[in-house]
Image (cartoon, chains in turn brown, purple):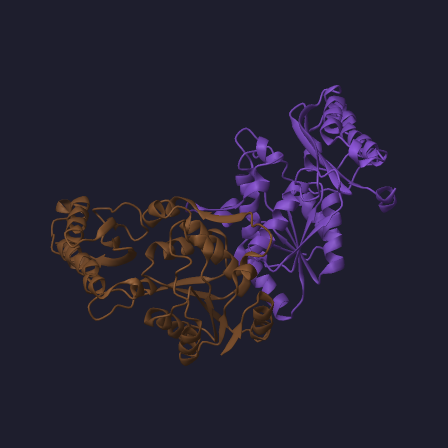
Length: 291
Length: 291
C-alpha cells in the first residue's frame, strides 16, 4: 500500500493507473476505522482495479461545540488495517492541503435535503460534507465511490450532489455492519462508557419494533407513521436517550407515503454526550400489497 | 468539427482523446459568438491538442425579468464560425440534458465574491454561473478552461471555484476584444439601437479617463478612489447611462489599496434596457513607485 499526503503525490500515483485505463474505487473516511469501513474497501476491491481510501477529519462538517478536536485519530492502526484489506493507496492529507492557506469562498449546498433530519440539529454540517466530498471527488477522480448506508442522509446527499453536478462517478451505498447485539458500528461508539454501550443496541431494537408493526399492519390505510415514530421516541426516552428524531420516510427521504411499499426508519439520539444515528429499511412484500 | 448534444456523446468523443493523453482546452459560451469568443478558441488551440466549445444558454444565471428568453440564439452561424477557427468539438446540450428532469437540489456558491458588484443587482446570478460551470467542468474534464476578461468578476469567481473545489483545471483569462471605438465586444451589444451603439463607447472612454488620472497622480497619498469613481459615474450619467456601479478595486476585487500598484476599474451601466459591463486594468509603472 502506498500512502500519499499531498494532492500532487496522489495525482502522480494515479496518473499511470488512469493511463492504463484501470478503474478506481474510492472510499472517503474520517479514519478510526472499523469493520464497516473495511467492508467498503473489500467491496471496492470487488468492483474496481485500484482502491483509494482517504482519511481526513474534515473541520468544516463539525459545528461549534461538536467533537472535531476530540474525534479519534488512530492513523497507525488504520494504516495497518487498510494494508490488510488490500487498499492500494491511502490518501491522508492535512487540513491545509485540502483547504489551502487562503480563505475558501466556495461551498456546495444540497439545499432541501441538507436542512432536514440531522441538518436541523447540525446546521452547516451537510454543506461541509458536500463541499469536502466535491473536493475529494475532483482530487481522486474515481469511477466508483463507496459509502456506508449507516449515514443514510449523507449518502442521499452525495448521490444528489454527484448527479446534480454531473460527476462521472457511481455512488454506491453498502449495508451497515452491526455488532451481534444489533448496534451499528461507528467511530463514535468509542465514546460510550460500558453502561452506555450496553444501552446503545436499543436503537436498533426500537427500529425493529417499528419495522414489525409496519409489516404486520395488513391494511395500508391503518398505517400511522407519525404515531409509530412517536411510540419509538417514547421507547427510547424511557431508556434515558435524548432523542433528536425518530422518523419514517420514503427511501428518497420525502415524507412517508402510506401507499408506498418501501420506507426507511431513521433515528438520531444521544446517550450521555454521544450522538448516535442509525436507520433501517422496511420493504413490504408484494403479496401483502395484493391482499 | 464534431457536434455533440448529449453528455454521453461528448464522453464518447473525448474517451479516445484522453486515452491518447491529449490535452483538452475548454471554452464555455452562451453562443451568439463574436470575435471575443473566437479569440478564446484560437488561444485554446495554441495551448491544447483538442478544443471543446460549449454553447449553452444557462437558465439558472438569469434572474426574473432578465433576458433569458430573448437572449440571441444563433446556432447555425455560431457553428460555422467555430468550424472556421478549428474548434474540434462543439457541445450544445439542451437545458434538460444539463439539468435533468428531476428537481436539482445542489448549488455551488462562491460566497463573498458573488454578493458584490454585479451580484448585488443580479441576486443568484453567480450561483447559477458557479453551478453550471461546475457541471460543465465535470462533464468536459478539460486541462485548461479559457474565459474572457470582459466578465472580470465571473472570471474571478471561476478561478476561486476551481481552486477551492480542487478542480485539476487551469483557468486562463484572455484579454477583452474591443471594437475600434473601444466598445468591448458582447452578445448584448446586439440589443442596442444605432443611437445607443454610438453612445456605448463612452464606458471605455470614461475608464480610460480614470486610468489616466490614476497614472498621473504621482503622490500615492493623493489617490482618492472613491472620488475618481464618483466622477466616472457622473460622466456616464451626464450621457444618459443608468449607472449600476463604477468601482476601482484591487485585482482580486478587494477594496482598492492606495499603496498598491495594480487596480481594476469596473463599470456596469444600462443604456435603455441593455445592461453593459466592462473593466480596465491600471498598472502603475515601477519608476513612479520609486519617485
